[in-house]
Length: 226
Image (cartoon, rainbow, N blue to C red):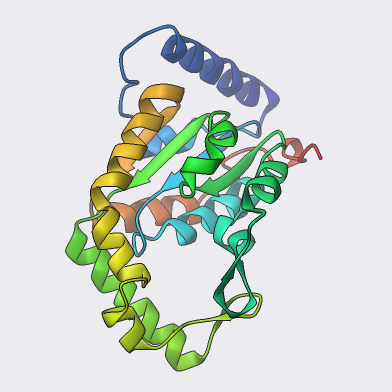
């Protein structure tokens, strides 16, 4: 990508973020294509969505196409055997000190300081029916393949997914309103460059756009600062 275009994007983003910070209004909703085109090698991207929305797939695709590191928070949080790390705040905060990153919008209560550095926010807000169906399908597939999700972490039984009050399915149902409120508050408070996706067709079109553009940002300019 020509240096002039990179510089132009950076300057445009700085003006947008400065304008957002100087107004009490919630930043405007961008079309997903415009949001994608605003990404630079300095972008720090939050990808929000309840379980089953496809945020991990989108995040990994964005990482591949931008060469921006993807920090998967659950991989830091869950230890072998589904034990939970007590050091997520420290490990995630350390991983999110780089110049640019992509990460999931979750564990927001303890990661607000890191999330406050985000320049971009994408919210995949699918209808509950589509999201829950995808979540159950994913559970079945992982269980059938005995897939290792993270180091030493494997999918629990389908019965657990359906019946346990601690399952991801029931967590998602109980916390839908709370999650949406957290996304809205984050958008209001940090005023990032924002877009949202509200249907499966829109999400799949967006994913195709990401995968079809291997140079969303110039790869030669995306070296992460450690």
